[in-house]
Image (cartoon, rainbow, N blue to C red; front, side, top):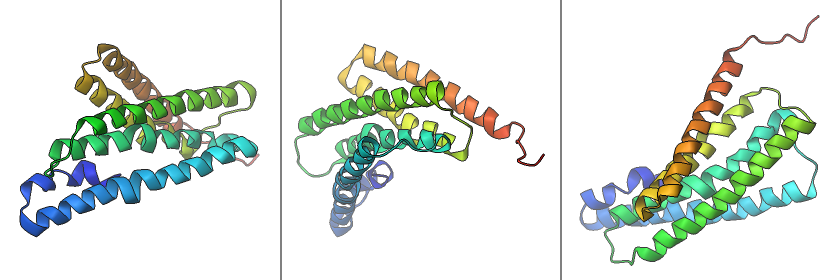
Length: 189
C-alpha cells in the first residue's frame, strides 16, 4: 500500500510499456500485495484479540497498528490510483469503496480507543517505544484519509472530525515525545 501514493504519479508521466508496467505495479502494490493481503492478517490479529489474553501493558499501543492500513494508507493509496489512472475505469465505485474502508477504520479507532482506556483504567500503560504506534502510521494515516474523504465528498462534518483528530494526533505525539525525552528510570537500587 506504500507504492501507489508515491508511484501513481508515474502512471501519467511515462509512456508505452513503461507506463503499462507502472500501472500494473501500482495496482498490484495496492491490491494483490497490499490491501487484500493485509485483510488476511487483519483477520488473524482480530482473532488473537478475541481468543487470547490481552497483550502486556508495554505493548498495548500496538493495538493501534491496524488503523493505519485499513482506515488510512489503503484510502490514500486508492485515491492516488484514482487521481492518476491512465486506464479507462469507472472511478465512482472505488470512491465508494474508500468510504467503506474508512468505516472499517473508524470501527478500529473506536475499538483501539476502548482497549487503550481499559489499559489506562484497569492495568497500566507504561512508556515504551511502542507508544509510537499511537501516532505513526495509524492515527496519522487515518487523519489524512478522513481529510481526503471529507474534501472529496464535500462532507463538512467529516472534515471537522478530521480536524479534531489532527489535534488529538498532535497531543498524543507531544505526549510521546515528552515521555521519550523524560528521565529514564533505572532498574538498579
